[in-house]
Structures are given as structure tokens and as C-alpha cells.
Length: 200
Image 1 (tube, helix red, strand yellow):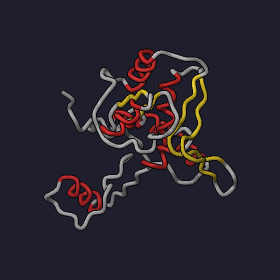
Image 2: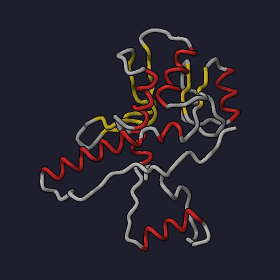
Image 3: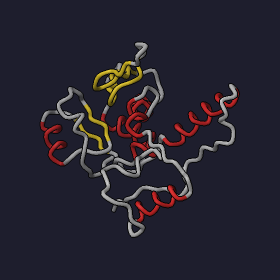
């Protein structure tokens, strides 16, 4: 699963709680759950880069760099960093930017309520594009002259799942070709999983 089913520590597991029940059923069936959430956000080619593609509209119209520190491997290879800073080569209007983001995320409404986004506040930018920020973070950002585009936490992540599935299939096929025993694995994006909220 992209998102960890356990995000905060649990004191116990019970069948009465639907989420905990699903974890117990997985354990009973010997199913392991791997959740690459934060690592997949930060790595080059991950969720944040996929979101940046929507801002750039698939064109060579700007540059993308990590927002908070690059992560270097033990061999000195840059593996990514937290967030992304997109610098456009030329100015565009807010309505064009909103249209690009809505098209990329397949949204009909570009703004959603939520909380989070502490990584962005205080960073010099014309626009903050994120899933969530608190009401007061939005007010402070707008007062400082920064536009804010909130698309909802789940909307900024779920669209990446088919991209991840394709990358995993490619890697598993490559491992199979090298006789690492990856044959028999299937990568699927759930068709039953959906946005947990209904916006009204």
C-alpha cells in the first residue's frame, strides 16, 4: 500500500475496528504490507516529481529541484529530497496554473480544505501547490503575498499509483530476466479504493 495502514502507533489490534481487522486478516493470511509513502514522495521520479510535471504541463518550461535538502547515497548519488521547487522560465497566470493542475490531477475543483503543509510555510515562492495546509498557514501565506493551491491530500497522491505500478512491473520484470526469482508477482492498483471524503 502506498499509504501506511498504521500511521500512528497502536496499543492493540481488534477485530471491532475495520482498519485493524484488515491488518489482522492480512497477518492471518501471511500477507506482508510494504508502504513506501515518504520515501516515494522524496525520491527523484516519485510523487513530488509527478506533481511537478503537472505544473510544467509536460513541457520543458522550467526547472525542478528539491525543496528541503538533497539526500545523498553512500556512493554520492543524489537520490532526491523533500518537496519540490518548480521554477518556470516565463510567467503564467494563476488561471493557467490552476488549469494545468486540475488537468494533471483530473480534478473539477482546484481547492479543498485540510491541514498540513508545514514544510512550505516560510519558503520563498509565488505559489504553494500542496494537498493540505491549516487555515492559519493559508492565511499567513496569502498575507505574505504567496498564492495557495490546495488539492486535497488524497488527490495529490492517488494519481501517482498507476505510475508506481508501471515502475514496479518494470523492475520486477528486470529482476526476473536476471534470475532473481521475481516471477509470479503481480502489481495491481486497487479499483475498489477511492477518495475517503465526499466534497459537497
